[in-house]
Image 1 (cartoon, helix red, strand yellow):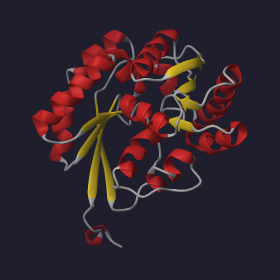
Image 2: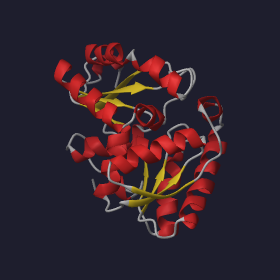
Image 3: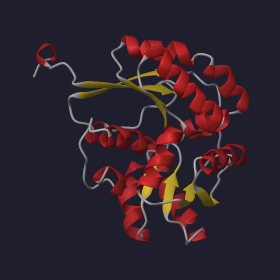
Image 4: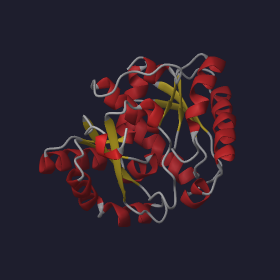
Length: 247
């Protein structure tokens, strides 16, 4: 089918990314989407995930939202758990509410989607596989605690944005498996595992770690897709973990 023959998308979902594709290629999620659901994205261009970096970038959020709506976005997601975590849950909820009211377009955040996905799977006591710095981890734990989850363990490798974005594909996958196993072994009572972050291509680890430990595994990128499935916008997919198979 030529480009001219390609049918118009049935639904367009938008994403406000922390950084652009020049610094972080987007996680490949096309196999999880039906062909008539299109994703569009713009970037906040965050210099780093520090408090100052997030504060300086979030002022561009309204303009990013308007750009996505101009591209036809019918729903918008704030991507990046560090963004939500550094802002704090109270502020994120206010931002989502105000933006939805201003634009008439539903606006969501990966922090909210991730917490909802874990609860959907019955996992309220969780372990977190994280490669981030202690500052980011502490902010993430606060966010999820306020969202009604109990974090039993969280790993760290001291990374900030620069280190996270510079990882190779192979390094990211290897680290996802390594830290996922470390987190669950540290907290054997965990009811679920969160692999936090999108830069390390963690999708492949989800079904394997679920098989290894017998508990659901969630990443923030797939929680975003689950939201669309849960709303009936996209169908379930098999072989990529419990969340996407039974939304």
